[in-house]
Length: 104
Figure 1 (cartoon, helix red, strand yellow):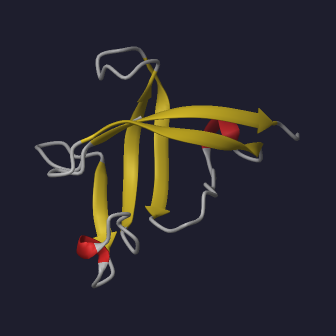
Figure 2 (tube, rainbow, N blue to C red; figure 1 turned 60 degrees about the vertical axis):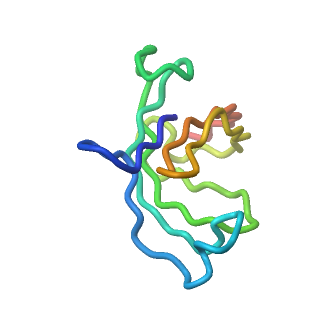
């Protein structure tokens, strides 16, 4: 997943933050909405396999809600690993390992 926060075509936008977010190393209290490209590999030019459309907030919880698309009504979990992060811009590449159980 490629999370781009600055530039001519950002894929994630901050919508709110706590007064202490900028002084916290974990960005606690930061809220954003995203429409990020999901690719096979970490290179932005690698094959596009989907989109990650999400409203997310930084906290100590790991739950992620999936509300649309192919994975609607699926249950499971995702293990997220930071591939790269630019602390100055907030741009990030995150690796997702997703495990689903489908219920139809």
